[in-house]
Image 1 (cartoon, helix red, strand yellow):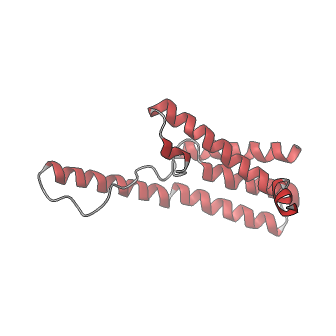
Image 2 (cartoon, rainbow, N blue to C red):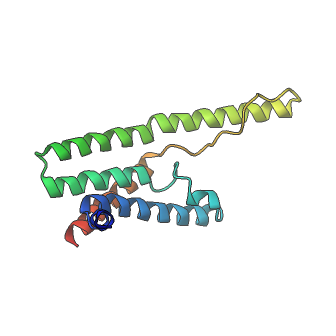
Image 3 (cartoon, one colour):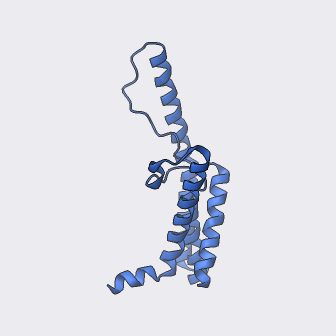
Length: 151
């Protein structure tokens, strides 16, 4: 039982976990205001404002720097992990989102023309993040790490 208590009192766990939770709650609120509540948003973390990926890894990097210092091995690992995840959220996942949208449009056009639809399922069209979504996620991550560090 002490392992569970240790985990939930560990600042390096609490900062990214709280950043992720706050980002997800804000994302649900933003999506609900934009287009109504969708239950998929409760378990689907892909895309949207703000980036929970950016919030989580930024909080991890900041709390690691505050705990171990910027000259530590732990911080360097967290920083590079942060950079890779944010670049992936913007780059690879954003391009995958664009490809999904294009394939969905192609399939719809084929159906409208009376042609056999492609043998694909409908792809998710919200996977990656825009720059503003990432920036807002980074801000949430910094704030979460600073708050957890001062508690």
